[in-house]
Image 1: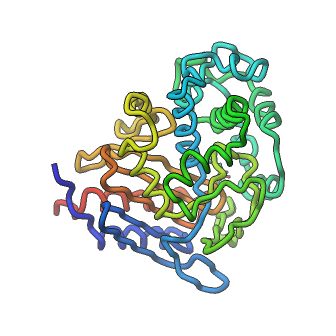
Image 2: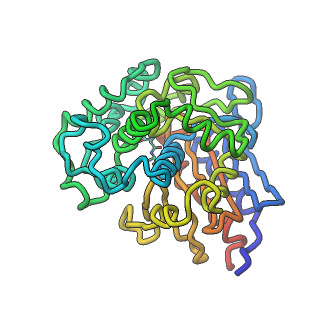
Length: 351
Ligand SMILES: C[C@@H](NC(=O)[C@@H](C)NC(=O)CCCC[C@H](NC(=O)C[NH3+])C(=O)[O-])C(=O)O
């Protein structure tokens, strides 16, 4: 069935409400193959007043998890990794429970504690303590395994950044290359994603960049410019830099079957509920959201200090939508930003 036409006014209204919730700027880019719709609001830099730009570069946070999953699934297709094998086979002695399989990591069912819960219990102090830190993957895994497991492996969905930091270590061990090289040779170069890079542990964003502003926990406190940071606390779970245009191309290529073998893409789409809403699910490194007009969309969200991201596409990859706000630790701004998906995929609300 043909998709409803996007509702530009609905997108613009959601972006204005995102600013009213406290974001300095917000933007949405809709790619329908041949046509592109871009809407921006507010500023990408509060000092200069420069506007938002859908070719601007920003920190995509957990949308990185989908990049890491694409690399992993290509290794599965090449016979280098068995998703149902224990992680122990590829990373002996790294995890405390040898029952944890690669698939458990990809579907957030490993039971591994998320070390970021401890790191960012206090938002700005937690961020300041790590913004210039360079962690080894071993250090991050040790922070996680200092806590008991949250569940028996395979039994429960429990979101954890630890899972995708281990996936990154697995990719590097199996290929003998860095995740940066693997992102470049398997995704960035083939799709010509010119505004996408993995520069960990560098702290700056090169080129046309969107500055990010972290909202402190204390009501009314001034926003903290969090643009420059290593994101070493997240690495293959959250440190990719990209643009709305590039993320739209990436998600369209993925669901359009151009990045992962069809039967393995089907595995990625085997979903379990990620919350009690009945409309949000997690597969392997991919989220699904069932929109109010009955259209399921696939992609990922991202939260890294100073940036909220939604990047979703239709099942066939024909229409992709990426929305960004340059603040974080602001739940209202995040929720309202998500309204852009309804306007962009479902069109005008039935009045
Ligand atoms: C949820 C999101 N996950 C991600 O993108 C990963 C990389 N980010 C996090 O786990 C959030 C870390 C805290 C951010 C901080 N919050 C606090 O510090 C709260 N005290 C902030 O909001 O910037 C996803 O998968 O969609």
